[in-house]
Image (tube, rainbow, N blue to C red; front, side):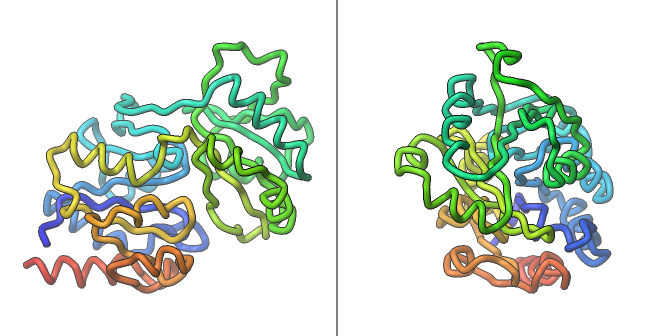
Length: 277
């Protein structure tokens, strides 16, 4: 298998539990980059939340790319947008209506800011803002213009609150938007991430690979959680599930590697790249 592109999730995949890239994983990806293989983050994060890690891998410039907001945006690392699948003011009003079905917070994101209507900012919101280098703006609905567009929304709360909320949501909710979970965090919190129905990591990787002239069977994907599922539903990608991945990914994987705290990406790339030399 000739690899032309590696697309990797960040949290729980590329990054360790304390949000670092291990030295072995760093060396493996730097080597892949030197071999001419495109290394592309495929994350729920915005661009400011991925750039510091790409800098560690010596990946920069307009000829490198990032898949962001779970596929809601594909950008060059210089900021130019290639693909954008937005949500609208009307979507926001509907999401606020559904928020009433549970004890959950709702926040929503543009490329540059987190927005919330909760003036008592939760620890979840503060942590996400710090993690992604994004400022928080508190706005009431009347303060938001009707032409407002955003990329992703998140319902967040404790794991039990999100479980109850999900059970209260009607079928039509899941038919209208692309929804996923990034998994229960170290704080014991969980999220339901909401994107435009046509936005997904899997589709964004397909579109970027096509743009770069790569075949799908030249793409390796790494993931661990529900928001990575669309990558694993493409039978042409070579799919690597982390050792800490959910069962839905492991069942679809071509390879199950070690977990993210045990150099899982480095371990897998050694196997894959050695097999093609």
